[in-house]
Length: 440
Image: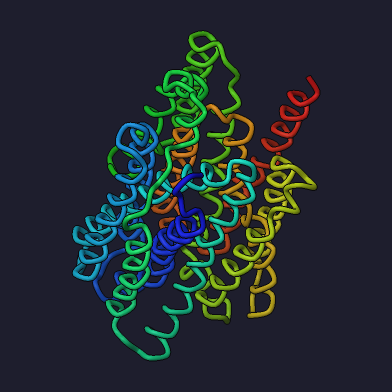
């Protein structure tokens, strides 16, 4: 690409994702501070952390819809500004409201990074999208490793205030700002290949139903009264899911007259993201009594994920993306079940390693599947998947927090294994769909 510094832009995108990832490690560490020192319950902390996830979703959806109108560069600098404000507000947080607001800005900043950088990486490397998206997403678990180790050193070894840990975020923030400054940033792949906005929307399958479904999920995650109504009994969530499914079928098949592959991948993304991020965000509480520092376990999990993603190219070539996802779901089920019965450092680390192998490829490969098998879904498709994953996690966090308090960590982990178990069935279906479409 003429006048485009491919390597510099890729490094800058990776560092922007590094800031995003470190915020996840920091939240996992400071949840105990806000329960012990500031008097919040675990459910309150889960709700205060929620904007980091649904804010992410809002930014990704908005970025997906408008990135081609305002340009990728604008979204990147918006991410920088939101990160800056969010970090400053987090440093001043001392109660539910201030922690909530700080996470709104951080979530919007994180979502803007993904909304801009996923299509940027796909555009920079059009012939190896899934491989380079996996390499880009190395920096999510890689950043959590760095953040986990920094948390252990700063707060445990040096016994420094948690604000010092948060302040370290300014270092990668400034570096990625400098690297993006003055660079020519290319248009998205949809624009460069001449796919119309209308055709991109059509390839989402049911864009309006999916968008309204995510808005409803955000309301559930942010409004306790709505959440209570939805979870009042077992029938209500099933009725809601059934209604949304029916509307997706009507919009996709009858109105847009197109395959429902994207809505199917969308549904899977809700479960893959909740399995990975819900578990890692509550790692401190889930493994507090296992005889090993939970942040060390988090570092092991995310370290293995980073290595796996870096070398994902060969595995994806051998198994194809849907095959990788199926294997990931199987390992995730086994890993969560092992963690639910683990005690002692060695068993916990081994169980966590199995879980890491499971969730390792979920996020980037899901986005890669959409980009490769539904290329006309464009930046909007990638943004919808990422946003949906985070809003699903924002719903799961308070549920997990309440479960940990009432049922205990082991039962919570066992219940979470149901999500990847459903995915095993879903990815078998996905493999069949992809093979049939390739044989035609």
